[in-house]
Length: 146
Image (tube, rainbow, N blue to C red; front, side, top):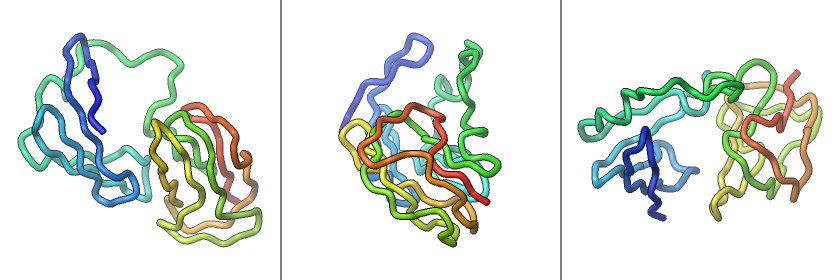
């Protein structure tokens, strides 16, 4: 699915591959990038360009929005947060379940795509804070770990 993304007043044609793949292929104005998730950190912690990156994207001239959760805080501590707004489709775990790094915890539908949300570490599920069919916002707590 191709979409137009505007960064600092400049428009880019962006196409994002399957979010359940690793790495995820992203095409920005015809240039391919490979995006990998580091399970020990935020879901959006590593972007590895396949071709040379567009400098306009990597050097923003405006500061980030105030009060918006940063990608580094989205999956930190003992909570799994929503990486984007959407609707919870399926929940694959319940409190007390032992999960391993990379295990699918639930599915989030966003922009008509079904995204698998995976555990960033080995853990035990303390609680599931959402229900199937529930709409969630960016950064909302989905699952808590022990």
